[in-house]
Length: 442
Image (tube, rainbow, N blue to C red; front, side):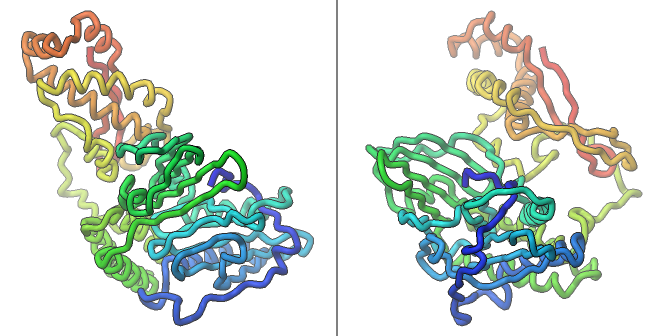
């Protein structure tokens, strides 16, 4: 997983000529005619043929990854994707896509392990061959860029935070924790660490895949890949989502039908399944790709009935998908003021260290040419700051001072903190355009 998913890939001859063991057709899928992996591969093939016409031959085959050192419990679908350039002097580009959710797996401790897990999305695993030879060809870079775009690699490879809200199991010696959108990577020192069963590990981040890497004093590194436990509800969600995506394949051009499918996928996010919202979001993005339309193009916009929003803005207004970030923040009440100030002082350095970025604004809707898109840490600090600001205007100075005094916070320290308090908060403007303003509270 630590290897960059943006590296060029050159595969030596024995990888090209290796035999593969196809999975039994009867084991292919219980969820309908097509799997997530097959649908994603379809999008990838279409995109390659559109952008690199006659430059690349793509071969898809079911594959047994145990021949490459990946040991699965169960029979998940695995596909080997071989992209062979028309230039015979350039080595093929190879990677593997695996369904997840019905089987855990581990990387073999044997010396013949030849692939590495490089990406986890809410729908699939992606493995690349371990590089035995390196080099650089533009065609490899082009293919890699297309694949990363199709699977939203930048979104799912980015580390959101380097800690978990849940305490790690006892007798763990953690070396590193990386919490990502669909997975959690935990690296531990094996000597002195007791590895619990998969259910305990899955409970650390419900709905996400846990990738546990144990480093011994000597010998091979051990890696265990643990998807969330499957339940009747999670299987039902998977079947429903695949059925909707399959329908989207035959509904390209029918915007009303696609709009109805989008709404049905949105309802899946509320299912009582850990990670349902992430799967629904990934499924909706895949639906857009299958239909060949831009995200958001199915949303209704009623210009005539638009009225300017005048109520206070929150993270939910800016991006409802970020609501999970604020669940553990205390409410905007006077008794919570000391805790809010402590959290602000704790998270502000992280927000400064992980700033957001500017993206092109929708000028035709009245936005600025460049709009600021905050990072997750900034959104958290923003929400904490908004709650502090709310208390500042709803409580009297005497009430605020009494609450701080009771908590043992001096007037001098709170004045020093607030004097540097910058709250970044979002507002929605024009027709839903998101604008990020910066205001000072002193």
